[in-house]
Each structure stands twice: as C-alpha cells, then as structure tokens.
Image (cartoon, rainbow, N blue to C red; front, side, top):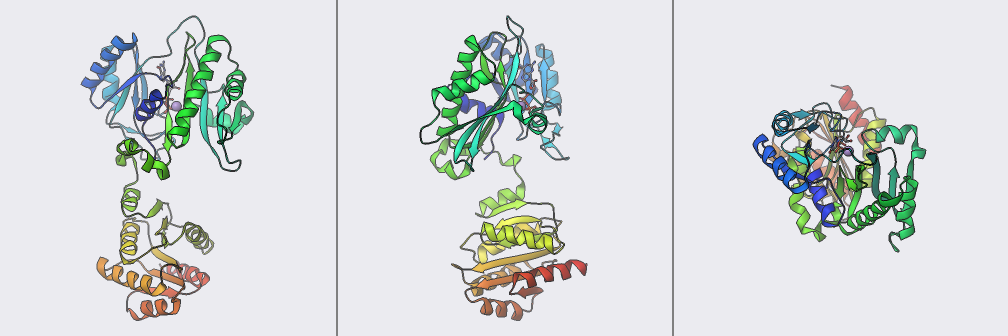
Length: 398
Ligand code: GDP
Ligand code: MN
C-alpha cells in the first residue's frame, strides 16, 4: 500500500527519524494558517508548498514550490491545489492535487554547505536480505544516476536475523563522505530509519532527498513509504491511511471483491486462477498476437460470484475486445466454473465481446459440455493452445 508523503513523515517521526516539519491542508486559507504555525514552531521564514499525490517527480512537474512570505504561500497553494499534476510517474493524464503539505524551508544558508543525499531501504529477494542504498547524488535526478553512474549508489546488505549492525550504519555514513556532527547525525538517522522500516513491515522506504542542513542536521525532506499489504493485519492504525482516490478505480473494485487485478493496456481481458497460470496466459495471448488488457487472478476458490465480479470489472475496460477465461480445476471443479460462467453471462446480460473459456483439470469434459450447450456466444477450448488460436481467430475477424 502506498501512502502520501505527509503520512510517511508522521510515521518516520514517531520512530525518531528527523523530518522536514510540515502541516497538511486542503485550502489556501488553511495553508496560510499552517505557515504561521510553522514559523512559530520552527522559526522558519520561508515555506515550501508540496503537492500530495502518490507519485514522485513532483518538483519537476511544478508540484513543489518555495514561498518567501505569507502572500506567496497563499498564491502558490492556490496554484497547486486542484491542479492536474503531471510527472514521469503519473502518466499523461496526471493526478489531481487535493492536498498540499506546507513545510518549513530547510535549505537555509549557514556555516556549512547544504547537501542532498539519497537513502532507501528495500528487500533484496535474491539475497534474502534487506538492503540500504545510499548516494551522494540525491535530489531530483536519482534515476539518471542509477542509469548512467550506478557506481555512485552504495549498497549495504542487512541480514534480518541479526539486524542492522553499528559498523554498517557507520560504513554508509562514511561512504557518503560525512564527518563530525553530520556523520553522527547520519548514523542516528540510518538507525532510526531501519528500525521504522522493520517495525512497520514496509517493503520500501525511499528518502530522496535526505538533507544535510547548513547547521549539520540530517533530515528527511521527502518520504516514499510502501507498506506491505500482507502485513496490514498487524497494523490496524495504517488502514485509514489508504487513499483510494489515488488508485485505479477498477483495481479498487477488484480488491473489494478479493480479486487480484492489475490493469494493463491491451485488448484481451483475461480471468485466470493462480498467479503463475495468469502469467502463462498473458504470455500465450502475446504469442498469438494479442495484448493482455489485464492480469486477473480469481484465486483458488473461484465460484459463480467471483467469476461474475471478474467479468464486470473486465467489461468496464473499454479496450477489451475479447475475454479469455483460463481455469485449472484443482480445488474448484470445472463444471462448477462453467456453471458460474454461464450464470454470470446471463446475469450481466448481453456481453458484447466474444468469450473463450478454457477449462482443464477435474471434470473438464463436463465443463466444456455445459459451455457448449448453453447456447451463448461462448467458445470452449480444452488445450491452452486451442484457446490462443481462438483468441487469434476472434481478433482477426474484427
Ligand atoms: P519530488 O520532486 O516529488 O521528489 O519532491 P521532493 O519532496 O523531493 O522535493 C523536490 C525538490 O524540492 C527537492 O529536491 C528540493 O530541491 C526542493 N525542496 C524541497 N524542500 C525544500 C525546502 O525546504 N527548501 C528549498 N529551497 N527547496 C526545497
Ligand atoms: Mn523526492
């Protein structure tokens, strides 16, 4: 589950990670009030207005602006609130900004240089370890760094059985070229960040930039936190942090029906049981000249209700020109799935696109018979290859 920057910063702060302080608001008038309050709290003169959307690259897209007085705060909040913010992560349609974070300016001048770093923590599945990645090249161009000078990104792997060792936190701070107070602050920062990562059951933390202020404080200016959905049952307090307005509406509907759905750009809708079979099905659609419109895993216990919910979701995608249902009857029997498909078809009414159903496993023959005898515009196939050929024929006939 993705959360907003302001929510991520609240969590980090509760673990003792120093952050750029801020207050989230949804109107320009409240923005001014928030700026006043921040000045009282932190002494800051300037403020940054930061669009809260679930996407990075906001700065480059015009979603992060510096304000030098209260009039400026009001004006820039007016500009950003309600805008359709387009970044390299939002797609061309962009995302509507409903909230802005009013934050203290932490790039103020002082005795030493202000410098941006990059720190992230994620799971390295290959090594079965967590990995801390850090770079002196923090800021808005980290993707460029990763692509053109990957040697500038240092990695420190942490064995989850022993946890982060002190020499490791120091090694990272040292590799970032820090010394004195800034070095100590960075070690503290990394320790607190790692603890937060583990205890929140997160799958990714990306802090870019981590800032060294001109008075040698180390703090998180930005925070991208990805919470592991599978661990949410252990964190009841995180559930309200979900913002469904940031998610694809079809994916929201699918998750409400316990379906595993990811929308894609192709024209062949697919409904499959099991993630591995779904991947194989997408491959065969591609091999037969189609493009999958989605990934949809209805799970092991597919029944008429889940099949119907899946149908409805697939049909809401205007790109879908054909639907391929590929079910392996293991726990669920093929004749039950076939009955479900026919019932769903009747319940939804006239489904405007051809449906190819491939049932294999327990009671496959009975399933095929039910489909064939239903009189509906549903084609049955027993082999996956036959199903793919049918998809090809159907697409060619259009
Ligand atoms: P992103 O573009 O979505 O990654 O948003 P960030 O939160 O990383 O902010 C983008 C950029 O805004 C940063 O890299 C900084 O250059 C700038 N920025 C953020 N906070 C401040 C601040 O307090 N003062 C100044 N002057 N610039 C800031
Ligand atoms: Mn950033």
